[in-house]
Image (tube, rainbow, N blue to C red; front, top):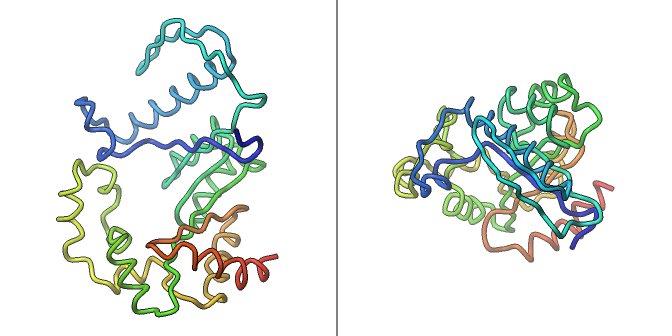
Length: 227
């Protein structure tokens, strides 16, 4: 449907999304094993051939995809630590990350990802009123203000637990992690951070309802300077 424009992004999952199946939630190292096996199985199915598989985590009996695109999409792997970055390099076609972490990119490159795409996500909240931008970011994305929580966010089971976790997050805490600004130079600096860390693609994630204003701002004031 979108030749050359679509890629499949995968990761090791979140308890919030997966607890509904009623199965035990495995530790991170097991989830990475599952992810690696799943990627291999996806690629086998994308061959278009009848596929049977009996692995450590998944079983498939003579499954087949009958309608395939002319070119199968690449698989990019999300990573927040060196183990996942290594996996992304070994079995993925690219890396996805949400912070300008040069060490993460280094781990990806060291395991064979040097010539593969590296996508970084810059989270922003565009608004001409910076205080309103901070309030919006705090309302819609309070988890950005969590500090020292490690991988806890991936382990929480329900929205109610997230609400409890962010109950004491302040607006200024969120503003430290989300760029709340209408200054094009500030946005360029955010993009440059990812470029300097070794990312060759930057996805800008706009928080809140002002999506049309955000797109116009980037079209008129940010992207011309990037180019």
